[in-house]
Image (tube, rainbow, N blue to C red; front, side, top):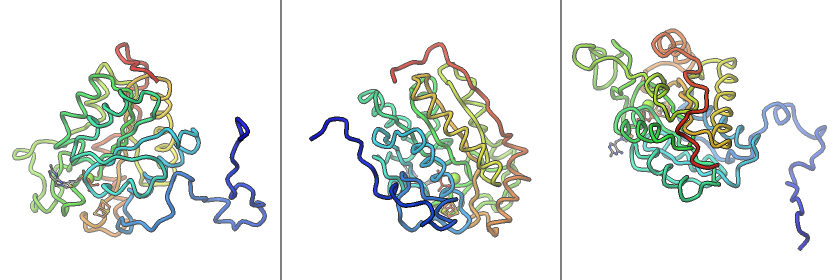
Length: 274
Ligand SMILES: Cc1ncc(C[n+]2csc(CCOP(=O)(O)OP(=O)(O)O)c2C)c(N)n1
Ligand code: SF4
Ligand SMILES: [Mg+2]
């Protein structure tokens, strides 16, 4: 065997002129599996997957990346990524990611979690992983409901929003206001990077990808906990058409969950190894 031989993927040898416009403009990232999606039409989980896969490709870290899937509609995330994956019990992905990163500090560890998973049953795990400054990356998909179980109210459900468990709309007096996880986590000392982005338009999707890339880079530089919240749609449980759902994100969710970077700095108590 010749040392340091670079294996060339056969698909890289194809003459660009032999490719269709679709292949040239929108090639499938190598980290994204070539299988049919189980997500509903108009669901943005698939777009979020693609962005993460593109970033993993660009950073050339596929062979050292391990994802941790949640319980929720994205429980099958491991089917869509061509990298190692584990599945955690509902809400426990940050705890599992902590263990993986501590025993294998050279690996790149990310969790992929819904709002029910992260902000409800897993609220303790996410807050304490952030407080410890764990050098992991969290991709947090906020669609304002428990999608998988039939659209019940989540901690992120908007005031007045109708869900299957709040048929008259979320009542502020009864259930309180939605939890703003990015703002909450950004003020924790061990946190390096927190950004909230949205998937409702191509321009916002591009910004979301930039934030995901920055979050992974933070981990690669050993700078501590990073999280990107992505406002996402659930047309099925919102009882909307896909385009209507995207408009609803823009007009209803964004005013409650403002977009932007909430933290972008190196925390004093982080650096748990690269
Ligand atoms: C310990 C435990 N409690 C409750 C459930 C039921 N359960 C499955 S998915 C889910 C909510 C998922 O919602 P979210 O995390 O927002 O993901 P989405 O489906 O919206 O992407 C719940 C409550 C479970 N599987 N395990
Ligand atoms: S139920 Fe909602 S979150 Fe789940 S796959 Fe369908 S649209 Fe997506
Ligand atoms: Mg959800």
